[in-house]
Image (cartoon, rainbow, N blue to C red; front, top):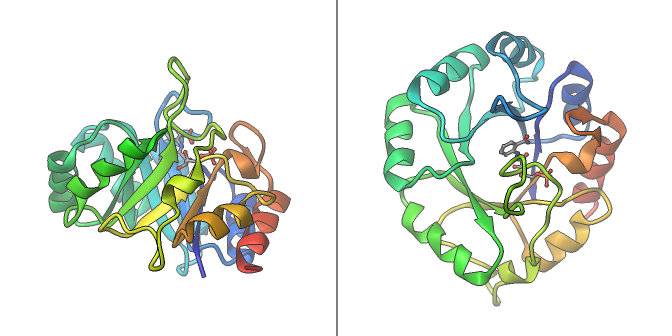
Length: 216
Ligand SMILES: O=C(O)c1ccccc1NCC(=O)[C@H](O)[C@H](O)COP(=O)(O)O
């Protein structure tokens, strides 16, 4: 069964809904331009509300060590998701310095974009294939954009980028079954697809999303 990450949670209701849906991860966004951005104090409080069965992943975009360290400590993060232009060397340095799981998001439009995953094999704990947002978009993720999931449709053994992976971008309760059927993704990540407005998570949509994943 695919693992579930609910990204961009900002309040107790969203965390409770993720727990009710047996989500595996929640994502805390540390990117000031995002409507989902958290202060370190907010993240610390949310961490205290998160059941121990759910792991906390902090999302960063080209952040420096000072910011990542402060967030890891405040929110007692289990992992960091790198959503900017962090290369394998930077990812390795972050893993070495902070000793948490490191996920790298790769923006995908065409098959050629998948090849970059290989350079992170043995370095990161997970690759997240996410849709490339349009040029000039306000954010590099969390915008409900999807890519052609057939790019991840593997052969008999399924798609194998040589590193554990997940699928993100444009998922919601009505599309995730098709996404899973097409890709056999071992993890799905959702943000705007479980919101009523940017940054406003819907507990009902979170529960529906989790049910749609678990129903498969
Ligand atoms: O959520 C944000 O505001 C955000 C900001 C900067 C970089 C990435 C961001 N979000 C990434 C995600 O939440 C997801 O990993 C992914 O992009 C899926 O988002 P969505 O299409 O909205 O489900």
